[in-house]
Length: 248
Image (tube, rainbow, N blue to C red; front, top):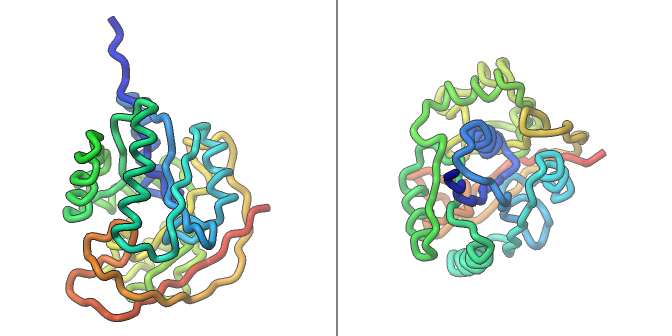
């Protein structure tokens, strides 16, 4: 008798960690990845925090060949609003037979705990294929597999304007300051993956303008929808450099 694989959704940011996670899941075949789930800014129609246009997100999903679920949230939502939207979205997906929710998180313990606690309330299992793997090894594995990715957002606390809109390669990694994780696991930078073994064709785009946007610091350190993750300081405002990517 053949065991039926668990039906899972992959939390898809459009960036390198979720792309590598999907690749590893496809290789292991432990799960049936039935849906990609992406948090979208309702106001701007862009991937939350990454700032990537929905058109490019949809092109990724089409090239991957897995149905996309867009979870729209208000700009800078409160924890209550964010959790209500997430709970409703996951409840609907559970009705479709989804039993597992997969993340590309690597070592943020409090974020994993937050995710697992929320999922357990719905009877959904959290899965973390990259958990505790060395980030320097992961980024080199990512590049060696043939993935191509570009930075779309960098935290000005860690990196200056010159790092946004850059393709991640050996030179990029060499230029990173010593206090920046090579996978940006502390929210130092976010990316858009446009080619690699999970795609049937590359995603075409051109680089647009680069802008600096300032935000109010999140009121809760457990806010899974924010990428500011510094545990020592809590400034009233913080900023990110964004590079717009334009579909072609």
